[in-house]
Length: 353
Image (tube, rainbow, N blue to C red; front, side):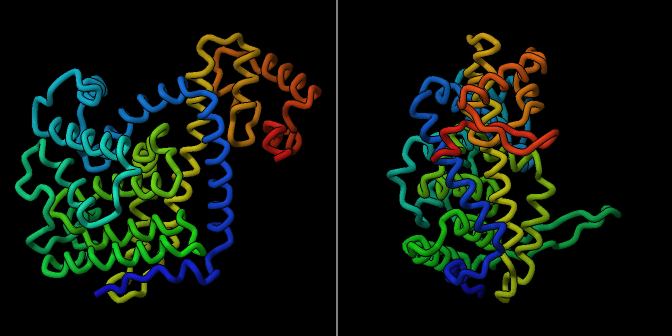
């Protein structure tokens, strides 16, 4: 059986790009938290949008789809599910809502994972809701000739409970090690969960719920305001490629978690970029054009270019954007980074800090 051990995260031999990206994300998270405290109403609106997109995105990855109108009605509770597909969607909504509301009270354990699966699948009437698989399963794919082949053989059913127990114990041991970066630990745990594939169905969706829970428990709640699941769905080829790369040799402990870690961190980074875009859109509805430009720059957690601002505010001319940016630079409100086409602007407070 695979040996569950995350002590390699404490050995200081990880690629510098991963370590640097975790530092960047941690800084962006701190800035976002500060901004949220000052803009509760805006973040409440963002949460409503993200909730719908999370339910849609996570199910879409598994081919569970319906119209946007029906997704919205089901997520907002304005309509009961009308068929099996909609029951699946309603189940994910229920599990997601529970994590959002009670993550701080939830313990990362086998019981919690089984409970998440039960909540997610009980609306659709799964026989195995909240239970580990009783038969061996495989992860298959169809090649370019239409032939099915086994891409990965998960842990056998008879060994699943022991594997899940070892996974949780290894997670707890690493979580309690102050020298291990929690952002690097999360994708390792999720990869191992997916390689175990403990359920007859619903493993992918549970893995995304578990990702959110681990992120929230580690102080990164960006998934409440920008859908992490939607970002995965938008780049699902990259996601599956990294999963395949990092699961190669898993059973014999010869796999590398690096590619899956890269995918996780890059997806998380994209969430912060998307947060800037959505914050500008929601926050700028009742502001003058100059005020919207100012708020877009001052509230961006990332350095932002003139073209990006124009993309966020399509009804504002580039000339107006350039004029307002010039005034903000002269007033010392923002700092100018780079030159020519590479020029970006950032809140001076973030630089000074």
